[in-house]
Length: 335
Image 1 (cartoon, rainbow, N blue to C red):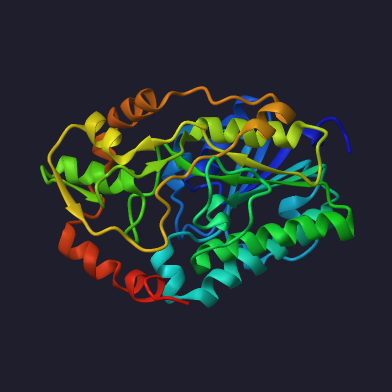
Image 2: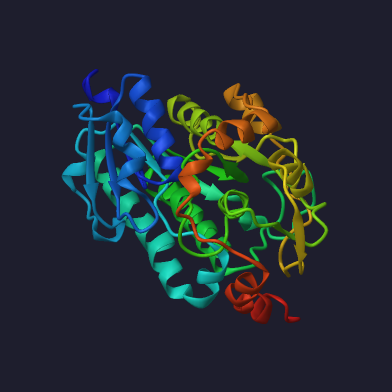
């Protein structure tokens, strides 16, 4: 592989939330970047700030349409696989879609990477594979996904590690805990807390806090996420799994305090942990990675662009109850 080609990266889901920040970082580091995104969850606007940068190319395609030998991967050194579908409730309602995209779609990307003889493949896994986990959660924690989304992401990870073992594909997997930051999804199914709260603040409505708000999440700013993925790609490590969070969980009540506004409490949901808390000692030790952006600073950065959430859906207790009915129906039952 030539020195020039060593600086080519493919980002699947590169018009999405985390993927677009990965694109930003790669371009800033001198890479040429090829993006593939179906635009089901991503937005071309997330890449618009790069203008007509000749180092960036974009293809609107579904990863399930990829086959080994696809020119998108020709001479690429690095592949960052973020493409997939998220959200819990839709995964309960449409499990086959999630298995098809998040598992079989991943296999298609793996085969393209294998045929291209890439130098490194890094998979965006999910901490949802742990289910209701003990905290802080290490990489050796038992696996127990609570919903089809978590299961599909874990099975995608198993495929990645299998391709490493069987086909010698140099691959690593990073289990992301709670990423947040600019470009976080604002449309679609009820889900991401920031999109919900920001729209409620713009509309002068109370924040819909689940339970009593004391539940904590290991929020990590998206630029810190991208930095970890690049370190994993440029390292000599292969076949590794790392947990990725800030290692400093924040309560939903703390988020509401930073956003400033009235609150209405809604029922706690089954299958949701009281706390997510990544043990990040392994990624710190192996990659020398550290979280940089403090939570309050990250929230302030997002608040500077709150107008971007003006067209986001407005959720209230009644519409949330309807949207999460399936959640309670299936995850609230005893096995």
